[in-house]
Image (cartoon, rainbow over all chains, first blue to last red):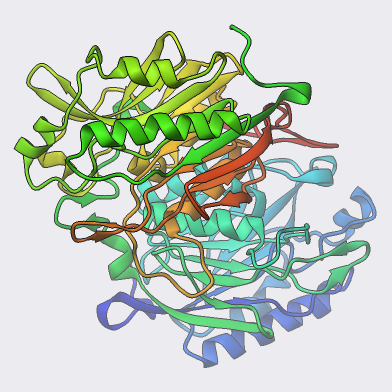
Length: 273
Length: 273
């Protein structure tokens, strides 16, 4: 592994960035993503996560519109994103991926010089299945310099198998680009998808960086669930403005022990599941 | 299946009962459990859940004390419990089970005439491993008249595999006897174990009846997390006094659809997990 920004005691500053995203404004969205990277990196972030479909917007009128806003992995417009990333920083950004005749709801994992990975969402929600092809992995693991980064997208994380398997596979932290539509909930409660992420984080000591939309797009209101969840499952920082920032300890997250008698992973009974 | 108390539209009234439990007072605890059954059944409950180790108490001084408070499955003292259960009502009660040289942290599933099942906790927490043998199933499914009842005990449910597999196996509802020690948590948050139960309920539309202790026992304070969680993962009723009661729809819980495009179970990608 190359050296990332994780410092003393495995502390890593992470950022979830929810820039203004305008559907159809591919170049403007990319420019705002680059500005978001620079703002977050300027605050010391070593991992910077953007929402699902941050380059294109989400509420497509039809497949043709999605196609018109798609990027291939080798599109030249990625160059400006790489150029905006300081050395040692890793960025996860949701985008609409064109690959042959298919479109994917993907997340790019980028650093200053390389495309570390692309993840294609495996669990498609709502009308996404009319537009996108589903991916062939339920989350991925990426060697990210600071440690092992898990990546999943939105609805993926509502399947408890996904964060669990990423954590069991060695994820030190999970990057979760989402677009959570606002749903009704009892007063005082977190958005339900956030509760699921908190529970998954606690079950596996998996810090989770959630970048959500805010405001509304066409007829969809967003829940504004951007949050950084620590390895105990608590929200340590939640969306207030464009940038949500916190330091998390990957070293604490890696230790699954619950002394004196327990260990969250060793206590599993896989022969019974 | 025999007819239970589930009525119109699969509505079932469920109760979580947290009686006063005194460590060492086996006969007194049993008598209070019988009174709790009668109170809850009098309010129309068809499923009545008591805490983990409700017959014995939890904070044993040593194994010898646990042994002195254990019951075999055929102990005559169960007769009074059966006698207290009205026809069509199912009771889940945590107890310290003696079987040969072993002790188990078990939950009995009882109706008026029969012992439907005994479940032995598979994931032992804290010093329990010094006292108990772990069971050989991670939760069980019981045909309970009103439907298919899942049973797990306390720490079991913190392993996301357990409620998920019970739900995938056809559980209509989960009975969860617990003894949750109080841990610090951010202001305004639910106990973390309850968040995990809420998330598991929502992921699988699995209503969950949690019977916890309250107050303290020896040096352990309880979190008082008794709650009834609906199939959307929301707490519909939480502990206020001895009896926590709510109606849940098993018919709604059985439907995993998320129209028009999704289904919580059909959307799974088991080939990727």
